[in-house]
Image (cartoon, rainbow over all chains, first blue to last red; front, side, top):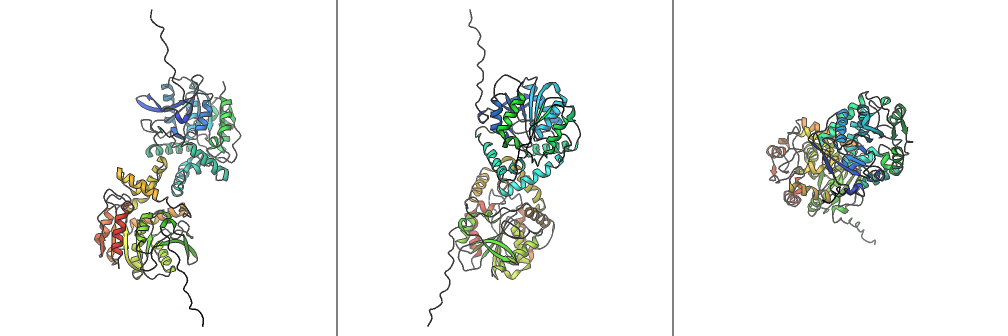
Length: 291
Length: 291
C-alpha cells in the first residue's frame, strides 16, 4: 500500500508588495514578468499600468490594501520593464497582449484596474473580450478621443525637463497638485515607491516609452471603443485636478458607461488621486469588487 | 591731529566653494548673482557655465583647486538661476551680458574659463573685446559650426528622458563615458555637486533652458567668430570621448587658434573630462595662467 499522494504545499503568499517575488510566464514565446499578492481564490484583479510605469510604480499601499481581500496581479506588458518583446504603439495591440497574458496565467475571468494608459487598455479589453472581464475600475483615465489626451506627450516632456532641471521626479508635477498638500502627498508617494529595495524591476526603455507616447497620442485622436458599449460594472475614480488626462474625462466615462459608478473626485488631487487617497480608494474599490 | 584713517577690514575669503557666499551686482538694473573665492590680487578668472548650469554646477574640486592660486569668479548669466532678466537665445547676446557683468565688477582685464556653451561665449568675448581678456581656457567646447554641435538639443532631450526613466541624473550620460570608470567618475562628480547644502542657487527655468538650447543650435550652424582670429593665449582641454561637443572640436580649436596649447585629451572621459580629471586639470590650468 502506497502513502496517499500529498498535494504540493501552497506557495506561501508574501505579506506585502514590497516583498512579492517577480515571476514570469511565457506568452507566445515571450516572457512577461508579474507579481501577485493576496488570497488564492476569487476572481483575480489584473492591474494595467500607466505610461512609463513598471512593476515598481504601483503604490504599495494600494496593492497591499487591495490584496487584503483580492488576489492582485501586476505585470509588465510586452517590451516594458523586464518583460520581453517590443512595445507596440497602439492601445489595441497592448490590450491584445494583456489578454494573452491573462490567458497564459490560466485565467478565464478577471477584474481589471487600469490607471491612465492602463484605463485605455482596460476599455479595449472589455470591449473586445467582454466574457473575460467581470468588473472594471478606471482611474485617472478617459475615453478614446477624450479632451486633452493628445497633449500628454508635450505635457510629459515638459514635466520631465522641469524635473531634470530642478532635480524632482516628474511624477511630482504630473500626478499631484501644486499646493502644499499636493506637494506633500507627492513626496510621500515617491518615498513609498522606494520601499522595495530588492529585486526591483528594470526601468522602461526609451524606445518602449516612445511607443507608449505614440499609442496614447493615437488614443487621444480616435473614437473607438465607445464607452457606451461597455456594459460591465465599472468604478470610475480620479483627482479633481488631473492635468494629464483632464478630470472631465472621468466624468465623461461615468456618464457614458451604462453601469458606471463615479467615486466623488478626490479633493486637491490630480492624476495620482488614487495614490494620494489610497485608504479611501482601497475601501471604495474593495466594496465595488465584492461579488 | 586726527587718527590715521584705517582702511576697511578685508572681507575674509571663504575656505572653499561649498561655503562661498552668493553675492549680486547690478548690471544695467538687473541683479547678476556670483560667488568668488581665492586671493584678492592678480587677474581674476571668470568662469562661464555650460547648458542648464547654475552656480552649483561647478565641481567644487575644480574651483577650490584653482582658487588656491587665482581669484575665481563664477556667475549666473542673465535669466539663469538666481540672476534676473531673461536669457537671450544667441551666444553673442550672452557674451555681451558676460562683458557687462565683468565690467560691473570693476574689472578691466580677466582670464576666462568656458565649459561647453561657456566656451562658445568665451570665444565671442575674446573676439569682440580682445583687450578685456588676458588668457582663455576652453574645455569641452568647439568653434562656431563645429561638428555635431547642432545635435546637442536632441542628445540632451534623449539623455534627460533616459535619466527620468532610470532615475539617473542626465549628466551621468552626457558628461561621462559608459565604462566602469566613467560611471564611477560620474557618480563621484554628482556627489560632489551636493556638498554645498546651504544657500544653493535656484535651478534654471524651463524657458531659459530652451533659450540656451536655441543659442547652442545656432552656434552649431554659424561660422563666426573664426577661432584663427583669436590671438590670446589659450588652453584647450577635453575628454577623448565627448558625445555632446564631439572631441574633434577640441582638436579643431587647438589647430586653428594661433596661440592654443592642447592638453592631451583625458582618457576614458567625455564632456565632463575636466571634472573627472580635476587634479590634473587644476595643475594644467594653474600652470597656464601663471603670469
